[in-house]
Structures are given as C-alpha cells and as structure tokens.
View 1 (cartoon, rainbow, N blue to C red):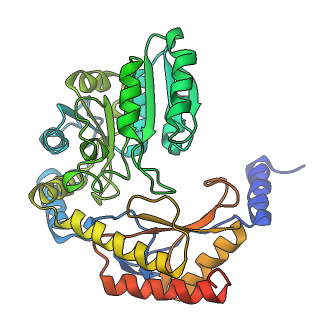
View 2 (view 1 turned 90 degrees about the vertical axis):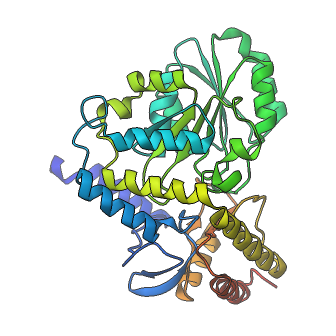
Length: 396
C-alpha cells in the first residue's frame, strides 16, 4: 500500500506534464530585472519582462523604498482595517486618484487581488456578469467567486456583446460588463468606447482590467480610460503597480462609494496584510516621475515601433498588436518552444506561449519591449530573430 504522504496523485500529474513536454523549471535571474540580465549564469537581452518603463531598478524608486523602510519599518504589521493602515497608504491612494483623474482609489496587494476581491463585492445573486472570452485568468477566478450569473461574449465582438445584452439584460437587477484594457497575449486594445456605449444603452456598469494599459496607454501612462477620454463613464478601472510601475500591488479606481464599499467587503483587504512601506514609497516615487514627464512612455512607444517595424520587414507575423506587447506568432506549439530555446542559446530571452494559454496552432514568443531598452539592444535582438528564423525555416 502506498504512503499517503508521498502525494502519489501529484507525482502522477507532474509526470503527465513531463510526458506532454510542458513541464518547466523557473528561470533564475542573478541581479535586477533590466534590459540585459544574467539568466542562469549567462548575459542575455531580456524581452520577457513586464517592466515597461524600466522602473524596477530605478534609482529614485530605490531611494524612496529605502527611506520608507527607515521611517516605517519593513512591514505594516496588520490588515488595513485593524492597524495596518499607515499614512503613506492613504497618501498613495490620494496620489493615484489624482493621477488617474478619478474620484477615489482603493489599493490592494496585487492586481490579481483586485479582481478576486472587487468582482464578488460589487455583484450579487440576481445580477449578471458579461465577460470577454479572452479576459485574464484573475478575472475568470474573480467571476467564479461571485454569486451573479455569468455570460461570455466573443473577443472584442460588439455584435455578440449586444446579442447577450438583448437576450439576457432584462432578467437581472444589475449587469457588469468586464474587459481587459489591453489583452496580454496579442497586445490588442479593448473597443472600450463601443463597450461603454452599449453599457449605457442597456443600463450596465463597465469594469476594465487595465494591467497592461497602466503606465503604457493614455497621457503619461494613465491607462486605457484616459486614452479614450472616458473618465466618469467607466465604473471600475483596475490598475497594477507591478508591471509598468515596477513594484507590487494593484488598485481599483472609480467613485467614492466604490471605495467605501470595498473597505467593508473587499476580502483581500480584510484578510491579508497591507502593502509593505518599501513598496508604497517606491510606488509614490514612480507616480511622481510619471506625473512630471512623458519621457518614459514616449521612449517605450518609440522602442516598440522600432522593434515591430524591423521584425515586420523580416517577414515575422506580429499579429494584431496595437501596444508594446509584440507577439511573434510561429504556429505549431513545439516549433514555438524550440524557437524560444534557440533564441536563448543566441543571447535573447523571450518566453514561448502555447495552448491552452493561446488557441491551438497559434504558438508564439511574446516580446515585451521596454523604455529602458536601447535601439542597439533591440537591433541586436532582431538580428538574432533573423538568424534563428532562417535556421529553423520560419523565414524564407
């Protein structure tokens, strides 16, 4: 008889991953997340990071983090509703609300926590949630936690969204339409103006997860709502503080009553310790930096344009991307994995993404261009793409 403590059922499932060729070990960085990194002992160009603005190792952010630790210590010591709410948490929310041009902001410990906490708090039995089919995993999990009924519309298909609204809206008290602002696998932007028009036509609320729009779209990275000038018409705007902002955390931006309610019903806020002072200090420095200049976002978009044009001229398929997220679609899953492996051997780190994360037959590497890359680094990376593409017969 097997020993229950050996967790044999998990051993079997791990072996299955190995048999399918999808078992992985984590890459290990030896130093900060920069445009070039030491990865598993080798210096490589990094095209796999969400560090859009190069803030993760920015001197001003590091200085602010150290100063916050000196003043407040390393941890807040409690959940915010007990005594883990420091004046810097309050100051951060005021600063973010001003930056986002919204009435109020509620900060969570991560973007994932925003979706896990907010969706269930603002919907109930008798309500309907309508979600884009390509929405992020954290939205899917957040929706599952809600007592509301659920429906899905085809990706960015406004006719299909309206079909769901026509068929089902009348049967429910409240209706919440949820979309990513920028879709992380393809880099396309939600049709937010049309979604908001439909939401208002059918008396629905709109909820945008702007993880990949935060620090990227809008004036100085204020996000997708700002990009489309939809302030006051999107009810819940979710931002992350761990991608372009370079630290950790997330927030919900909207009106004051949203904040009041989440303070009482946002479960990750009520049952998990608040952000550490170092993170809060660094985030505030990042927001100050973005509030004072557009140089970071300007450089990000300039680099993305440069990289995309060079890959396009070589004949690579970069899909429907409208943002610095640059997928290079290879097609067959094993070929995409092999392409990534060969790129790494040649000094470029970019992760493969295959089914079920993306549809079968659309295996790809997803390149994340940042403001911190130099054109010389990006040109070197393109040369490697060309070399490997020709060696593998992807490019003719």
